[in-house]
Every structure is written in structure tokens, then in C-alpha cells.
Picture (cartoon, rainbow, N blue to C red):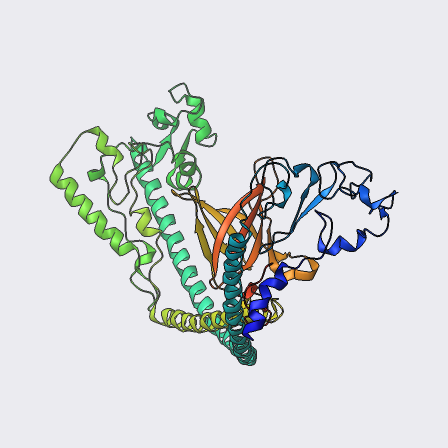
Length: 534
């Protein structure tokens, strides 16, 4: 065995005889016992014209070892490293192009043979890559097994959810029926409550209008003869209809419906509605009589306290304040007990009996109506809760069906990426990749993210489909296409985004290192000493 190892260097030193610049694979074309035929078949020349520094063949194949033919190729043996073809024009040009220096055999330049050192470094790199591939593939097999187990669990959960969905659907329909049955008496009771309130409100408003009309009639009836005449109506110029600031006799007669005077009943029925918005009361608020309690003070037994009671209390409080304050001038004519102050005082209408905001507010429901409301609300809550549960189950079913049917590679090795996101920070941006979902970029110093595309499809070549991903329809570029990203998958022991570039406008290229991309490594060859070539 030792003798064999000692003889190996001698064996490596033996070379097949061939012209300079010819590779081992082509040496059989150069047989010195017969004429040389150009490799393109264009001509034949005597063999002694090979490497005679004169170009005879159009393809330059007769001068593999000289610079005579500009289109020729010189083969560097590069023992200990990778063989290499260089252009014949570089032969003897004073530059060492071959690591073994054979291209400068007649230039006077001494080239250092660096092939062994290059080969050593190359072998180290290849060994490191082989180690990464072996470890990555080991992790890949774990990922495949993990997905098999996860897929079985998800399939089992999906089956359970699909079975439970039917039960939930039946429950939702039952609760829907109970809800609708509970809402019928609720609606009837609420409608009845509102109807009674609106009737009371209408009666109260009608009574107030009657009282206001009566007060206005009494103010206008200066001679207290039980009738309002044209002359008496003319004492209120604010009722002017033609905008000249005075109420003429004709205008007053028109307001009285063509009559010269009107009694209290006709005034209330016909005249008051036409003048109430312009009419200004002549008396101070403290001089006004208190209105009688409206109909709202007498609700049915099941009704809660009616609105008129708080209104009366407000009237009494306001009257007390006015009595304490005394007369404060003509401007107080515009403030009426129980009425909210208007934006542009003084108001043109006589005093109201209660605050509109209070009176317009519907009173609380009686006990029976409230019981119907509570029962209906409880039925609604139960129905809505069951409906939400059903929607959650349906959403879970959709997500599981999508994930189980997704193409995660030949053996599901890329499935672990589905719920993950990875980032790469550069000088300007933070790039974010969420596999099978989206790619985005965000300014490093803050700002809104920009979509670089959403999941499209696997985009590798036919023989290696799962080596690249395509993300499409991102945010549009200014006067350009929508952004898109191609993600190249590289073998690695860890999952990390290694680079992001923009080779073309709005088209990004991202590289993701992952064990799932590691191919199965070839069997490790047994150690057999040094090798001359890689």
C-alpha cells in the first residue's frame, strides 16, 4: 500500500502526448502520424503546420498553442485546480492567465504556479458547501416529517369542525326562531308605548297651542269686546307681510280672512296659525298665566311618570328665579318659562309650557314592556353568540382547507414558512417577506409600507419549479407597472433573507436561504489522498 502511495506522484506526472494548448478530450484529433484536419472540417494541413505560428484553419484549431489565430482557444491544464480555456490572443502576451503559467511559455515572463493553492481554497469552499447541503438536507427531512404530522392533525381538526358545523347551524336556526318569537311581543309593546306617547304629545301640543292662541287673542283684544278687529291687529307691525315695516289695513284684513274682526274661536282655528311665527307677546313673562297640566300627566297605569311633570317643575323653578330677579327690561319678553333660549333672541313666539328637549323625550317603558324587551334582548344575545361561533368555525374550516390543499413543495418541506415572516434591513429600507402571502418594504426611518407583491405562484424552471417564488400586483410605480418580486430559494442551514435588489424598475429580486431548498447530497466519497484536479 505504501508503494502505491509513493508511485502516485509519478503517475500524476505522466501526461498523454499532445500539442501545446490541446485538452485531453481533444488530443485524439491531433495525430502526428497523419495530416491534421481542421476541427470545422474546412481544410487539412500537414501535421508539422500545427502550432507553426501561422493560422491555416478558419476556426484557428491548427494553432491551439500560439497566438496566430485570433479566434483560437488555448487550454490551460491547471493541474491541481480547474482546467480552463482562454483566447489564443492571450498566449505569450506577458500576462499570466493560466494558474500553471503554461500560456506564457515563450514571453520571457516567469509565472508562479498558483494552481495548488487555488485548488486548496476551492476544495475548502466546496467542502463547506457540501457540509451546508448535508446539514440542510437533514433539517429538510425533519421539516417534511413535521408537515406530515401537522397535516394529519389539521385534517383531523378539519373533520371535527365540519362535523360540529352542522350542529351549530341547527342551533343557530333554533335560536333565530326563538329570537323572532320573542321580538314579536316586544315590537307590539314598544309600538303601543310609542303610540300612546305620541298621542299624549300631540294632545299636549294642541293644548299648548290653544293656550297660546287664547293669550294672544286676549292681548290683541284691547277693548275687551270679545273680538279682534283690523285696527287692533294693526298695533302689531311685526305681522307686516309686504316688508314695509307697517301693517296696513288691507294686510290686517287679509290676515283676518277678509273680515273686519274675528271672535276667539275663529282666531284660534284660522288666524293664529298664520301669525304665530311673527307674533310678539306684549306682556312680560311674569305676567303670563301658567298653562294647565297637559294630557301627559294622566298616563295609563302601566305608563311610567309622564313628561309634563318635569316640565311643570322647570316652570316653577324658572318662575321663582324670575320673581327673585324682578323686571329686567323689555328684553326679558323673549325669555319664556319652560322654554330653551333660542339662538337669536328675542323669540317671536309666545311662551312655551315645557322644554322641547324634555317633552320630546319618550318616557321610560312600563314594567311589562321592559320585560318583553329584556326577553327579546336575551334571545338576540344568544342568537348572535351562536352566529359568531358558527362564523368562526366556518372561517377556521376555510383556513384549514386552504392550508391543507396548498402546494408546499414535493413533500411539503416549505409548509413551515406559511405562518412566518422574515425581514432584511438595509441602509434605506426594511424589507419584509411573509412566504405565500406578501412582500413589502418600509422606510427605515419610519413611514407606511409599500407592497412589493402578493403571492402568485411557484416560478422556478420546469426542471426545478420550487426554486423560486413569484409575488405580483404590488403597489403601482409612478407611471409604471405594479411592483413584483421574485424570491430565489437557496440551500442553507437557517431561514433568513440574505439580499434584496431591484434589477429592473419595479421588479425586485430577493434571496431566501432555507433548509427546504437543500437537495439530497451525493454519497460521501472515501478519502483517497490528494487530487490534481477538482
